[in-house]
Image (cartoon, rainbow, N blue to C red; front, side, top):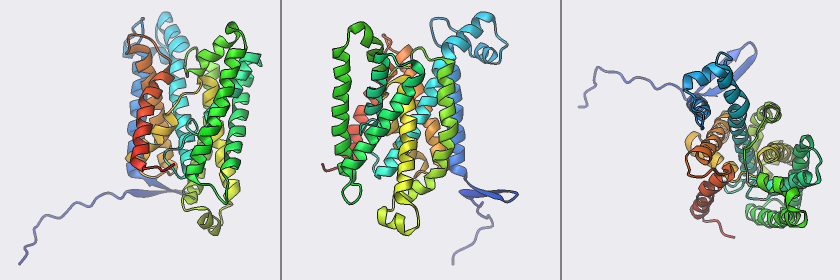
Length: 353
């Protein structure tokens, strides 16, 4: 006979919990919430550590005092005017790229898709470089980048359409369109004098150099508007994973939803490109890592993904600026990490082209 012990097993806390306030009820995934809080804490620690680094070393406690306006005049100048804008830009742009990558991977139903892989960032880069070379003004460069990203996405979408969107065809068409658009960027760099194209060439390497509080304001406002919208669209994005026929049968306006997702993803990628240049592979790697850690995309997982994107780009910038014998643009570091990872994903998925 089996003997029953006197000890009772402690019940495991539920994975999801419903929080009600008035007539509003919100379901919270406890595990994802914990992961998000951990990621936020890591990002804050990275921000504080990054501010301490440099030729003028500043202890962490002085960094906190300077941020709160209680430091010395020199410390506050270094922290607030020189270091903090660049560091916050890395965190915010990394989050924007991660959200954009999640959206495009969901639309294509493929983890190998991202705005930089299928040419969206390349289109934004061409228009932004043209704006810089022709001197349209720094305030209009994000607009030019957004137009380039949307037009490129529209061309890829139309050329990939054949009774629906095929993932393989989307990737191939995106790579082809990206190559053509990249040739246009190269043409601009060789056509005009060196002194005119030099700022555009340096920018095209993907760099967080000379970030200002105006840049922080721009990317902050974009995220303030588009990040909540992206969270709200996650349910529709998950429905798209079921295929076009099933999505229509569930009453979801397929093309309208897909178009809205494309516009939001393009806007996030375009503003990131306009501010920091074409930083590669963040939009590819981070959503894949978030899915492995936290599960399929939901609104709460998207928030975690954004924090993870900020961690990756800021960590890459710390390596590029402080941990190598020579200072490099952050795009070089993300490319060095991302390219092998992309090949690994390609091998894992056995994609047949």
